[in-house]
Amino acid sequence: MSPTENLKPGTQITPVAIENKRIVNYYERNDINPASSDTGTTRVRRRGIGNMTIGIDFIVG
Image 1 (cartoon, rainbow, N blue to C red):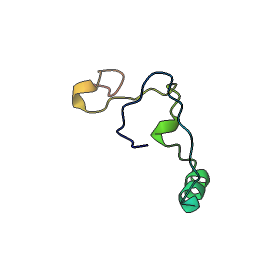
Image 2: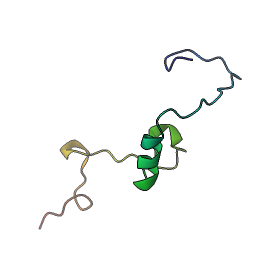
Image 3: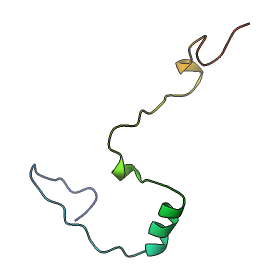
Image 4: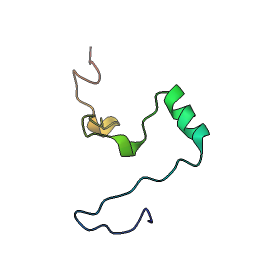
């Protein structure tokens, strides 16, 4: 299956054997979770001057 293949509703994806276990071990040691494991519970915070709020992101004194 290609990563860009169009899937139809109800299609089941069968996991394949892990080919590079060094990468898996590295992720586990460093507590890294690939984006595909995101459960939607994390909120992405927008950054940059256009998204800052006075009194929250910086204080004017």
